[in-house]
Image (cartoon, rainbow, N blue to C red):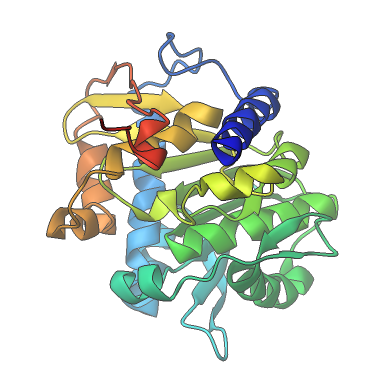
Length: 307
């Protein structure tokens, strides 16, 4: 009973801390006012995130269609991470695109949950994602042009690296225009998220994509509040014109929908970039924001008492 009460107290402290960095609940009307233009822009980003899985020529053509020319296209030694740096001299904008792992199943199984301090950002970051981001950061730094804004894009592990690279560049004074990720796992904790709360992050997710819920929310970690925490605005994409906007605790507790799920092929399919592209296509003519209500309750974690 004492442990249970401590967990409940820790949960209350967590919600109090988290709400200081969270936007209004998804149960209230969103103030974001997203429309088809926004979804069209995110679809352009999705085409880029999908193309980098195929070949250099395909990502080159996709970027060229949006006014960008590739400066770097590399695979990091020792990692299954491919990235590209491209530039649009007309708009004076750099774009950094990071490919996720080619095997989603192995990524979920092998994922470590260790947070380590990072000197550049000044926060604690997921160890594996940090190593990938550091490699990209070191390679691109000399290529960045003064006065150019920067956008980062990535899917899955690539999304994690993309947001960390953006935080590194932000810490060094580079102007970050936007971070767009698809099916991105968490990369830092509450204090890390708070420090970079002004970063313009849009995290697109699909209803049954389990990767954005990783590392999982462990109630035992609430004792010290050192838990993984998402950043930015989460856009939950349904397969029709509907979408929902979640932030802060609403986004975190969306994980409760998975607690009673039996793992299935849909969880993997909802993580594919093709699924994200198809869901975005349905929102080009009209969109409808809906309320997302989490069914989270403490009994999902601790069970219910039986007589």
